[in-house]
Amino acid sequence: MLFAASDGSTMRLRNLAQADSLIQKELYDFNISDQQIRVTTTRVDSNFSRKTYRVGLPYQFSKTQFHAELNSRLHSYGVETPAQVTFPEKNVDIHLLYRGTVIRTISLQTDPELLLDRNEASLLVSFDDFPDEELISTLASLGEPIPIVLKIETPIQANELRKRLGDRYNHLLFWLKTSSGKDLIKENPSAARAKLKQLEEVLPQARILQYEHADAPSEKLIAQTDLTFINAGDALLLHEDLGKASFFEELNKLRSNRNHSMAVITGNETTLTWLEEKLPELKKAGIEIVPPPQMNY
Image (cartoon, rainbow, N blue to C red; front, top):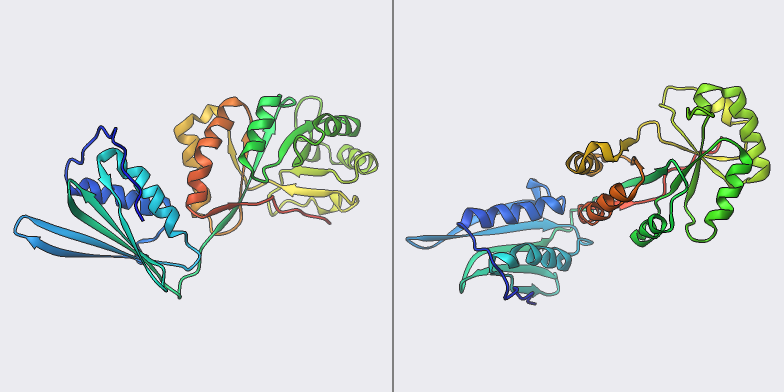
């Protein structure tokens, strides 16, 4: 197995420590913990010692994907990554070949005691206005169950928006707002109750976004309908004003949350471009994007 280095590589390794840094970054991106890694050093001659990284991995882990991603990271430094597969274990030894010398080896070994640790996370994209065709297409191209959140004041408006969206995008939530843009369920529970009952008649399959923390009593209000609710009370709130670096930093919090986590993104061209860039990295780290948990009372 060999992923060839590009002939157009323009960088060179400064030293072997830089190779170690690049390896460690790839291990981190795949959410591989230090407890899974054992490093040994073999002295080749008086001037050179070769490190071997032995990495224990669960059976379901894609060693081929790791190899491909590592090659992508290293090829611009002129490092090739030939690999050998051992059967039947399907262990993979990846050799970092630089200027004709194997400088490092990464041995990916299946550990039957390890289970693939996938974090489940939900992403929602909220729009102030109905999204244009390009934004809808961008979301659809991600191929993930990421609901669009549309703000409504009346049940009729919800039905019209559902028809307008048609079959172009099937993941849709509604957020009941007041005329001044505030959360209707929080601001006026009585009015919210009436509109929820009307919405149940107009669009019984509607799903409603609510912002309630665990200690906030909302069951009495929404138990009077058969609608489905999504609670984003503990969700991360992401928007363009954060800036790209902070936006990415907030999304990285999904990696460390072992319980189900959620983020609500204020949608526009910029934030969807950022999400499109960041999503492959999150998935590489073992995050599985799933529909947000539903509640029926």
